[in-house]
Length: 230
Ligand SMILES: *Cc1c(COP(=O)(O)O)cnc(C)c1O
Image (cartoon, rainbow, N blue to C red; front, top):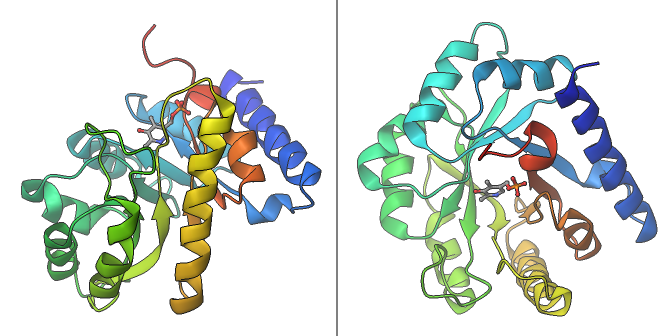
């Protein structure tokens, strides 16, 4: 069996185990396979094993991969999870199904205006800086509600949830505090916006903790496709 297929199975087993411990169902946690820097052939291997949602960080690389795979894999859902500059917004609005890294109104407005009318609204997550680190993308938790209010009015977008990349730390208490803060914010907002169903947190190293803290979508790269720096 192909290694990517084996790794994918291992990640599903980890999700199932983590969900079982906290009485959650595996179906409540979706897997986003993060294929940044990896060739289209790797995406195809995962696709053949049933994977349908893929995450990319770099717009040009992603747009090329999306075009290359369009005919063979028409039902892939592509998520942009990396920072987005406004001069790339049109390419993104035309090619992606989701953008998880929205952290300001200007970008949201452009994506909405540039989303082709014959496509479904672009699914959006607001990226939240839960660790408060200066160099991190994402908006501070206390500004999320105001941006959500504005984004939810834009006709080309559908506000689906929140995304965060917590601090890279081995201190699991700190990590847990940050994940739970995002979960609380998400629960408050989901009451107000019924279409908000996605809490995107958890990566290769911390997906168990993220599932325990309420994640509905884990973004996993290394554990599926291997290290990005050989
Ligand atoms: C690269 C990346 C991931 C995947 O990280 P791994 O540690 O390889 O699983 C998840 N989320 C974001 C935003 C990323 O940039």
